[in-house]
Length: 222
Image 1 (cartoon, one colour):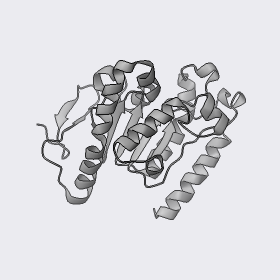
Image 2: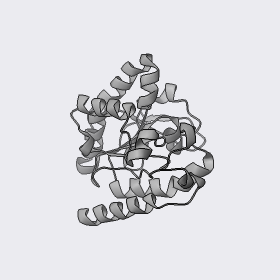
Image 3: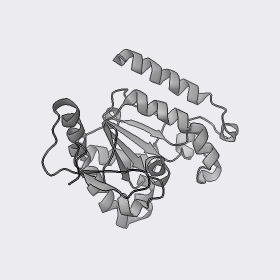
């Protein structure tokens, strides 16, 4: 798909999300929050659900958690306009409660289409609800910052910025995980374009029913 076609398809998807009535959350929202960013973003960030600020403005990560996310992007030489940012659930749950399984299920096709259209090198899941889309039954305190191979891209679970703000002891870990992000993007690009990966950089793959195996980017067990 050509870039202008991807951009148009993504804009159409975002408009569809803004008018979605697939679950009861549409009744209490001010605005749906589809997500935002360029259609060729190298990194796709996926959070949990919009909060009060996001619901009011219709944009993802615009409160304190968004300020921390932008600071982390700047830390690794990126700006917000370089990446695509969205959530697992596109409308604010009342009282900022956890999203319900049926709400996640209703939004799942939207997220799948966003991933397909943006086609990022790296997906960063922020918090456990986004992580569970690819890594169910894991504890984020154990897998944060580790890279998992899914097809031709990597999925990297990280703490949600709001959690890092609530738990100051997690902030250095959040920073360390972010510091590895540029190298992971470069690794995937080399893998796709030149069929090679920087020495010493490893990822993991998950086969259903088996624990993760330590692999290099060519799928060879170390």
